[in-house]
Length: 306
DNA sequence: AAAAGGTGCAACCGCGGATTT
DNA sequence: CAAATCCGCGGTTGCACCTTT
Image (tube, rainbow, N blue to C red; front, top):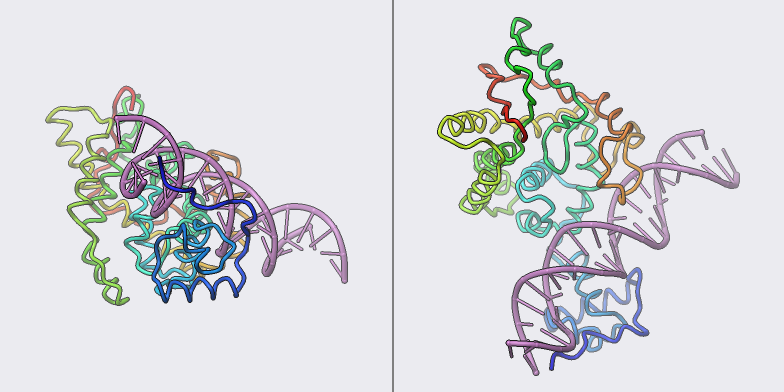
């Protein structure tokens, strides 16, 4: 014995909502409040599935929804939260009052994700796209030419440790909390980030790291964390630079960017295509400043098989 | 000016955990 | 406890609008 079916799907309307339907839904919820989506359509006189009503309300009709383009602060927050939460759009939306998970998801897929790709940053891992990059040669050209990278690398397979990158991003987020909170306050939507939660996520990432174990490696990892803690600063800084160069307009990509965008949202998982390589080659990813005192040895982990 | 192709976003789909009977 | 459904989530699609050719 279970509940009655949510709705009889036969004869229910689908597709775009009309203003009349919106009005019915708004009026009903204003009088009765949201919830009980199963019975809502019938009571409200709507030929819609309850699921469709809930979606329409939560994503579009809710009075507290903030419309319009995303601010730089919101964009920063999305990038930082995505770096530790991944595609947990509802969790990210919970940190961005007035924004819905659907809106953030769309904005990520249509704007931020493509921009990251253009900059040679993997939007899934938030790490530089090493598959598109001869890192050692670039670093050699950027850093002191006397540095013997070949000797340092020792012929070993050199890979960024992804777990540490994630952890670094997390710690960076924690570090940025004051700034982020400040921004929220400025926007009158203060909702401080939960540091405890973030720290637990950080530790989870840390424990998932495929780094070598042992005290020495822990020291090395801590150094990596210290260094890579700046990773998200660099990422966000670089994004802002790009926006400033183009004249910021999140909602209106430039023709240049449009011509480099991916063809379809169904191609999200595509990686390493010629198109992306071209995007990367045209990017200015490495125009940011290398911090003083940077010890390049801390960037890498040299393990037989990361 | 028209056709073709690209973009952005609202809405739908399907899944899995939670809840109810 | 099991079955049936609710609810919310992330992924995907459809289509109107825009841009390019």
